[in-house]
Length: 292
Image 1 (cartoon, rainbow, N blue to C red):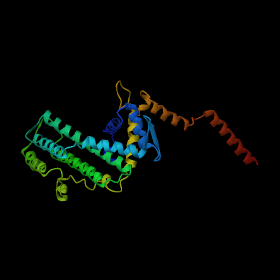
Image 2: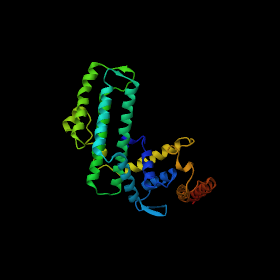
Image 3: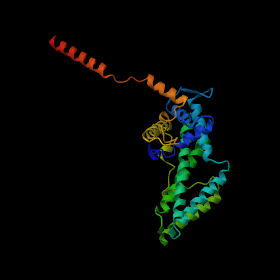
């Protein structure tokens, strides 16, 4: 399962479904996503007097996730992200790590980790939907790599401590990284690290297994969905919760009732009396065979 096995940002998928269909409840959004990912390829989902194929929904969800990360002004987004990264490097190595400095570092890692997950999920949804948009896939992959690179830079060149003093050596080690990030701002959105730079900085993600051509994005989506369902079912119900409570045990919507009924008709409960009768019949048959 790799880097996303904790399902930390899975709620962003539910958010995307709600954005696609503002009229649906949170529980219905959970059901729509579950059936979209886990249903057979020829499955069609009916709701709101409309009919959607599995691939139509996956494409819609994927593009919504992408839009939530990629603002209209890519140059501005690129510039601001590098500005924040440079400030984190600077403030975490300027002599003393305050609570504010550490919170800035934590918030930045959290933000780019969330966006990385959303873009990866967008890539998984749209590729599973069998779209053939090479330029779109390339842009998603480029930005996933960039977020991974920046996260590595922050983790490699800032200590994970707070209320501690840093050394002159820490400052000197971080200074070229700060200057590099500032210079990348001037290069614009289309910048790229060289292979040599990636290797020397230990931030190389261009050959990550989950970004190569052989990676099975649909299997990843199914496994992630199952992990999330297991997580939701194991968590206690709390007042006002919606992500951490399994839809089946919350306020059951019409879609959830249908899903549960489908499961009920496809299952047979274990009948102990019936089992004992069959066992006794089997023993009698064996005894007759031995006597014969």
